[in-house]
Image 1 (cartoon, rainbow, N blue to C red):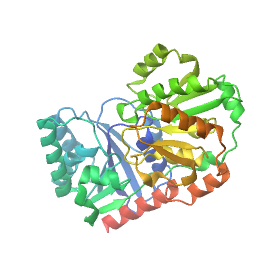
Image 2: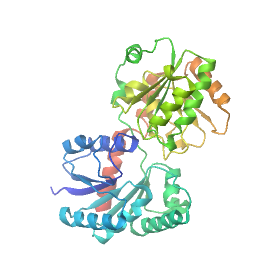
Image 3: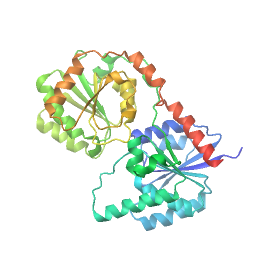
Image 4: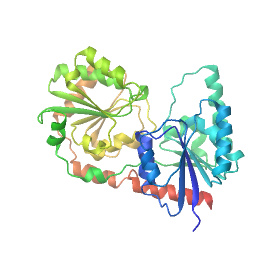
Length: 374
């Protein structure tokens, strides 16, 4: 059997929601049928490099800050290492540039997948021109449009995309095996020196403006005034982490806020929490919210985030970010003090039966790849 060759284009493969999803896809996809390589739009080494190499993927590092040089390098790369059957781009609006180059290089199947709704890059005239041009190129050169949610689809492809026959929804699934393992909440907390009888509020996400952890730090201060035996567990890393750590120190709550850094054992850490909070300014989907539900956690979520990520509805409570911190603090404490009306086992079963099981995603992607090539 001749393997079909697929080239993924990503910003990089540091540990994050999109990147972890891609790794879990690669661990399960039929590598007897597909040969998969990656282009990074960065020249730095990333967390998942060794994992990709162990799966037989090649990594090409191209810095996309100079488009003309990028154009020359990617076309040389495609000539030297091709031919590829499919290019699968995950770099939001820049995907327009990618699929145009792929078209000019003769790649027959060109997939653009959107995982987000907003780049938060401002609305300068140059940025508006860039957005318009990239959207036009996506519409002209992409053969397939993939989105994790309706909001994500409209955010990149435009409001009329819902009628586009190229559009397909591929919600990001999760690996549910770790959530079925038995973890001792007390043992996990002992690692962080958290008393077993105290409350733990958790958050998982990259430390960037989108995730709005500054709001969560302010909330932590208000919660601690009302309930001093509460701890906050921040799982993740990113450019804003030093700023947030400084803010925690200035507010005098450092003894109750733990920054774990980037972790591979997110399922285990979720099991140590009593409440999960996601106050993001925007999300294309909110994959980590599905993980929190798989762990059986009550979840306090920003009102505007996509509802597709709601699987175990009784666990979800939504609030607008315009509500005062006092309302968020009181709601958080109410959720902490009351037992969820869904057991962890029931919650996990519900997620297993949903489209957000990673095994379902693999089947969907394989079907899309095969159908597009046919």
